[in-house]
Length: 350
Image (cartoon, rainbow, N blue to C red; front, side, top):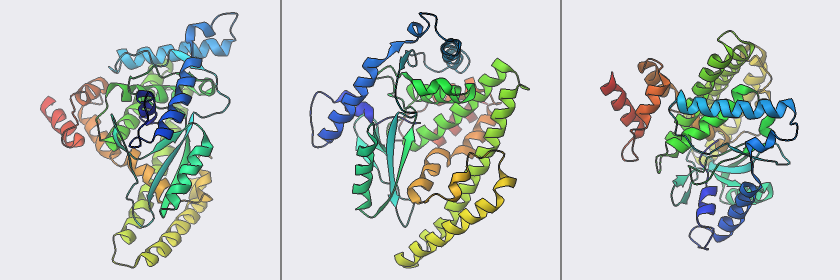
């Protein structure tokens, strides 16, 4: 998913500060430490005649971790070497917000990571309370479940029980994405961090599945189909964002912009439902047709995918050599614009 504001809660748990929100620090920090303390080493899952599916899960995780380090060049860590039982199919609820008449994202500030466009809560009721406060500020709000996050090497990020049911491609994407955050993180550049981790997670998982199971395997064909569906959905959302931006940047009164926003989103959902069967191979995205869409939801696609096309171009320029591409990314620093830095590094290495 992302880097996590939770690390602030963990790092500052020993003191309370109004600046860092003492209640948030103590509550989320205590919850996270509780999860970490419950973690058991993966090897302990293999004791006492472990079920075959548990053995396969542990072997798969260890194989993906080796691949991430040896084939991709990610930093070796102790992440994903421990396992936590949890009674739900997600880890936390994350709140995001945006202006109603623009894609100006609401941001929180934390030490260590800087400005962050989301705030996580282990108790979903706390996330709802935070969302209600933001709505009172006349903001669009979106609350989403997340399956994992990176603590950027401060702590050993564990696996959670719901991940045992993930297909190999999803598990590889998750581990590589979060491991990339632990390898490369640029202070105050959350969007670039997320775009790059999203790209590396997806491409790394594709390469893993291809090497492990073969380019013509069932898993590979399924992953390609999922990637094609995802690309179509992201493209659709980006077109909707562009259409709304034309209204938001116009000189029309705010009330008119909000009315047009409602009309445009409704029309987009109707087109989406009408064309769904010709656009997508799975039912994964069907819910969009009936969801209550707002700017906070749409803005997440700016956060994670706005720079995706440029990253694809730079990756192709590297000869689609992911090890080389990640090595170039390791040379980035937080000063200046990271995408421009990456372009410059890639040009110099040609």
